[in-house]
Image (cartoon, rainbow, N blue to C red; front, side):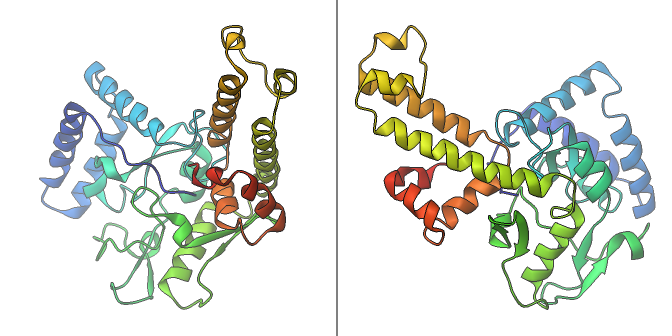
Length: 295
C-alpha cells in the first residue's frame, strides 16, 4: 500500500455529494441515519443525473488508483472496479458521501476482506482497541481514531515494511503494544495481505520485474550506437529520424513509464527505501541514481 496522490473533484460533483450527505446528517438519530445512508447509496445511480455524477466520481478515483491499469489501492494486484468507503458507511453514515472517504479498490478487497470491518482506538492517547462491528451496531462510534491505515491521508509505509526477499509485510514498529504496531498489524490482517492466494508470489515477481526494467534502463544509458539501442528498444518510424541521444531519451522515458505503471508499486518504493541495504539494489541504483526519485 502506498499513499494516493492528492486530487480534487469538480465543484458540481462535490456539491452533489454534499447534498446527499446533508439528507443523512439532517435526520434525528443515528439508527435512522445508518438506514438512510444505505438507501441513498443503493440508489446513487437511480436517475440519469445521479448516474452521470457517480460515473464522474469513479473517473476521478481512477486517477489516483495504481498505474494506468487502475489497480486496486489496497492489494495493488487486481483491477479496481468499485468505490470503497474507508470509514464504513454502516458505522459512519456521516461519511457516506464524503469525497475524502472514497478509494478505488477491487471487489475482493472491498467485498470479501475489508467489508465493514473497522476498529478504533478507545482514546487518542490510548492503544486500547475497540471493535466497532462487534460492539457498536446502531450505536454511534465514540470517535474516528481509526486503527486501519488510511491511504488517502497517510503514508502506509510509515507503518509497514515489505521484506523484498519473502514478499511479506511486517509492522515497522517492534513493540506490539504501541499504536503504530497495532495499526500495521490490523491493516495487514484485515486485507489479508500476507495470506491471500497469489499476492505474495506476485510481489516477488514484481521485484524481479522492477530489477529487469531497471537494468534495461541502465543498458539504454550505456548505448553508444543505434544498433545497440534497437536491440533494447524499437522506436516508431518518426523517432528513427532523430539523433542517438534523442532516441535514447525516448527509450528511457518509455521505460520509466513502464516501471511507474507496474502493479505492486509498494515493491518499487521499498526497493528505493532499501537501496543501500541490499547489495544487488545498491549496485543498480548507483549506476542510475536519478531513478531513486521516480514515483
